[in-house]
Image (tube, rainbow, N blue to C red):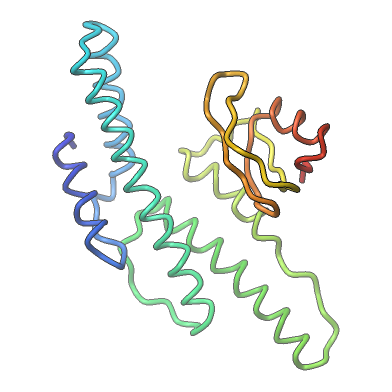
Length: 194
């Protein structure tokens, strides 16, 4: 895959309300593309290679977030109508979809028990399912320095200890944050570790 192919995927994803078909090796190819431009930039320190690398990451994030949103909406629709039509999700995305779908269906069954006046069993926590799936999406290895937290108060954007920008966050959001920042937010009662 090259930069133009990535831009093509972005245009297709933007123009479609459903998941578009991408290469089954999309994420593997994306890693190779980013490595290629990172190495080119490290060797020559060319501002053009640096800009291209930055653009590749922006476009990749846009494609990922659009696909992620479509997967979440598909899981929600499928949990309501109990049918699963074929989709264009690649393997890592299918794993996310399956986890979300199971969580949503369990939650719906719990609510149906409430409506029937039956004893309520605790629903599966969607955050637990998402935490499990993060490892799959990130290539099978979870970052051990990340902590799952529930945001208690609105938090504006801030810069972490490793100089990455975090936030803004809204109350009741569930987020994975670096351990150091999660601990600090927890101490200040802005978040609680889950």
